[in-house]
Length: 303
Image 1 (cartoon, rainbow, N blue to C red):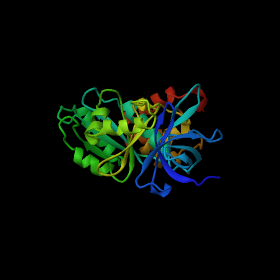
Image 2: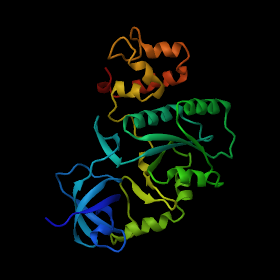
Image 3: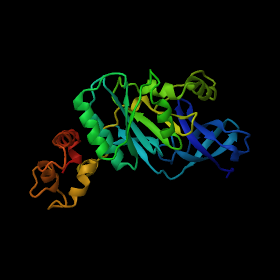
Image 4: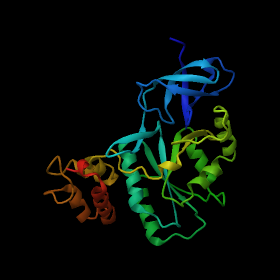
């Protein structure tokens, strides 16, 4: 077998997969290689660390996928799921004063992260706009749960340097509802983003490329950002009813105290989670949103 080299998947292209190969391949600098994959391999996604063989300095084949420390899934056909990004450290959930904050969607993102070995953090964009007292109260609740909050304005360049410092030395992704400014944030952090896109395009020899899922960028101040516009909503893919409950961080101390191991935390007898809601230890609004998300789950995922 040809020598294998380490690489980082940075984009999916129509003609193959763009892999960044480091100096261990005998290259003077890191270089992009257009790769195909072995058919027997699982789906290769952006963020994957891979081993590849090279038939030329610009072409190769992915032979192995290195173990992933995390993988983000999204719904596919039926009740199936498919991976969209790997080895994420943190998902930054972006929201703003306008459009109005969708706390149900926010809870959904947090529940996914809690179950995927991915940290979650909150980013309030457009801080130059007034925020309602109700949203401020909601933010304080999430902060009390241990979720960090970063207040920024992509357009006014407020808080961008501080956010960049947080993003350095990790692999991150922005998620959030449409209109909150995810693209503006990405552009503020990546002023030469179009140049990076063009460099990926060059390996296909067919102009500007079209990514099918995500693109990984190296941030100027350190760290990697996976930009995935198609992952605005990644659903409750693959979560069981029990995992959804575990995804609510403040439920966790009470779940093991329920009378029944398979407690659904709905109408079950001696449910410690519901008791905590009644006693004010868990916010009623969060519990009500848990019930709504539970109803959104595929029937096969509920007991």
